[in-house]
Amino acid sequence: MTSRRSSKRKSKSPAPTRVPRSLFDFRPVLEGEDAAAYDELIRGTRQAVHPVDFIDEIYVADVTFLEWEVIRWRRLKFRLMQAHMHDALLRCLTQHLGYDTYKDIFAEFLTQILHESKNLSEEQARELAYQYANSQAEAMEVTRLLNAADLKRIERDAAYYTAKELIQKSVRRESAAVQLIDQLLRSEGRTRDDIMLDTFSEKIDEIERLDRQIATAEARRNISLREIERRRAMLGEALQRILPEVELRIIETTPSSDKEST
Image (cartoon, rainbow, N blue to C red; front, side, top):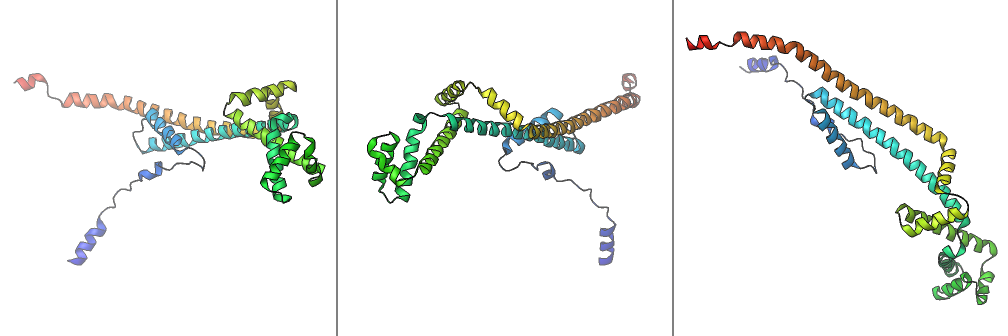
């Protein structure tokens, strides 16, 4: 009995393998990318394609992945140009900012140096720093505590910090920062477009490499889209061939109303 049952179990044909749905739930989202945006993209692709079988699901996953790659390369190109534009703008602002623009930051930096390295109380350090920053004569003690090179470095750091803050505020579209930067550039006979051109000329090789990556990803995506269209066209042609035969069989097998009446 046992051997017969076991042989029966062995003779059964294996059940068809089902591909797990999780294969299409994989999201190629890198750290820092928006997973919700990818989900929205794949939902939109699925709504456009209306997958009806497993092959369609593969095409949906493929097209979505390739479109996400196009978006990624475009975003990286934008970030590259933006970062280098900000670097060029930062260098320009650091060199040409008026002293009054970063005077208070200079005083704060000087306060910290005097307090930490010259054993002054915070109150003494701040008083001396602000007196020196405002060019008051009684602050000459600062030049005894720090040499000219140190003071120049602190001032340069204050200008750099202020320029960086201005750029960040400009990115957030704070009108005062935008106007101040544009005014400074105009005083130097330059515009933001000039800064952009400098960036473009410096990074043309990197930009061209990213453009090639974008074009490659777009070409692969377009191939997948054409494959979907070709497959749908082939299915449509097959249906056009089959449907007349099916209709004929239905007509031939359907009893006529005359026969039913008799």
